[in-house]
Length: 401
Image 1 (cartoon, rainbow, N blue to C red):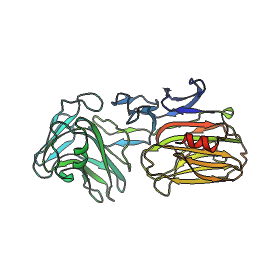
Image 2: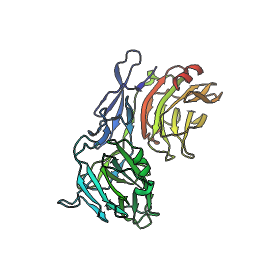
Image 3: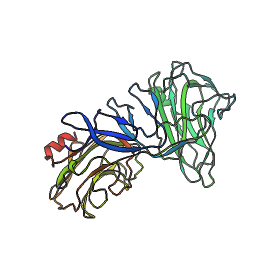
Image 4: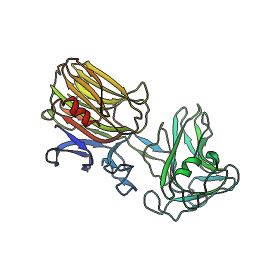
């Protein structure tokens, strides 16, 4: 085996993510260079949100006992007081209300383990709401997200629309998401994050994210976020101004001796953060796009993975496969050997070809982007492996099962 990363075996330090030797289980000098010029948050092994220092890779344990590498694009939380839902006080939390809704500090633990959550309280007045006001950009997709927790005081909602989250003003169209059924199904005391997206109109201006109820209800809330993205990214806490989390880049592990330029395998267990139909690439290459083997999310259709073998600036094989859900973890492998190229997804050999090729430069690098840069991989990574030999079909079916 060449380079291996993950499968519950993680080591990080500032600006580095370490790979390991499969035979010994020891970490060695196959480091990935990592950059993120800001702090960021992750969910730790205890299930709590915590801050990770600048330029330290994030191993996230959201619904994942072994952890996964989390790589995200840059994003800005436009909510200036993301954890403060006070309706009065100095400085102002920027929180407003309508139709008798009110808030109070919660006495129950918040998602970061503190006591900084709030309870939203509704008295049964129709369309009562707790809201924020933020400025948004014209013609941009905006995503609102918030953590909500059903408590012993939260009622059973008789209709899905009894409680809902929404955004309006300067949005085309105004949007809302019914939450009644989801909250009825949620266990008491469990924090869950809810999100929805809308597109700002041509004027931009103000957006009003809100949580509304038509019935008497109490529910805990934490961590309001509004970002210019088509999907919710990890929580970005704010306390008086908007805050930006920078993009993450993770590249450059390995050297020529770690890869075989005649045959081999690239394997990954990955999940997309969202199916936004953009290229997100994991590759081994000669540090260019002329000679590379890659796995990537595809850009033309939903839930599609693509694999490619490219030699001397010409494609020897381009293979695609549709999965049921690209945001769930999928096991994917591409075997490269001249005359014997295969694409394996979740225990099935989905494509094979007898295309021939000769790399004109030796493969020398594993990257979370294309060999010639571009297509930065944003998503969740449980494991990546490279093999210096082309495994058998039976071995690859077992590996991806």
